Amino acid sequence: MSHTDPTRPAPVLHLTDVTRVHGRGAAEVHALRGVDLAVHPGEFVAVMGPSGSGKSTLLTLAGGLDQPSGGEVLVEGVALGGLGRGKLADLRRRSIGYVFQDYNLIPALTAAENIALPRELDGVPGRRARREALAALEELGIGELADRFPDDMSGGQQQRVAIARALIGDRRLVLADEPTGALDSATGEAVLAVLRARCDAGAAAMMVTHEATHASWADRVVHLRDGAIASETPGRRASARLTAVQPSDALHRSGAAFPSGPAGEVAR
Image (cartoon, rainbow, N blue to C red):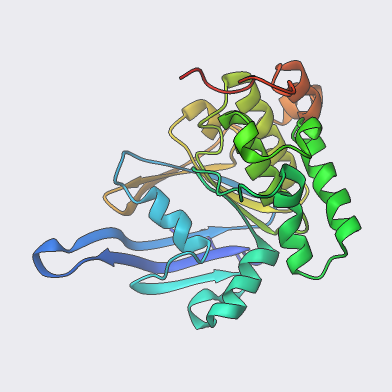
């Protein structure tokens, strides 16, 4: 079910008959089986399914972090399988924002430096890259964390820094693996409002989630089972909530942006 439509803009992300097989012989595992999926500009897609259904595999293939065993993955019309390592890294850095479950922040860099690094690698002057990083932190309601190192942050704060890094610059595709997993419900909703607003501004996003309430922010919910798309259902767009509450206001009112302590983080 690729959802191609000649009247719509070309998809930002397009997977065609994608398979991913791990191992060989008796140990062979089919993580994905013939997946067809297109995500268009302005579209927010949530991916759900039981553990082992292929959700994270789908996300890593879409982000060029792994190669399919068969089929084709295109980002903005470019086949990822046809790129060398350097060009693939350039495309990922410029076009794809990826929110990892384990954050992947560089411990020796501050929050602002972590966020600005991809822009500096693309040749953006340092001062401009820092301004953009500070703006991204403010958008997530954590501007006060700019000069703090990851080890001095709570898990929830690190999660929002990772999301800010994924959103900086003109990222046309945002991929998020359980982006609200370390956040309380109020902060999670506010972060989803930021992602929703980015899609409404023209980006495409695909998010893996276990939470039906979080999937309701999406335009479309893709259900995976045993490595294949079992069904697709429309999401419940939350435009009313977006017009009523600005994302940054919601983050601040949620109590998430405290300068210290585990505010905004799920109790462990």
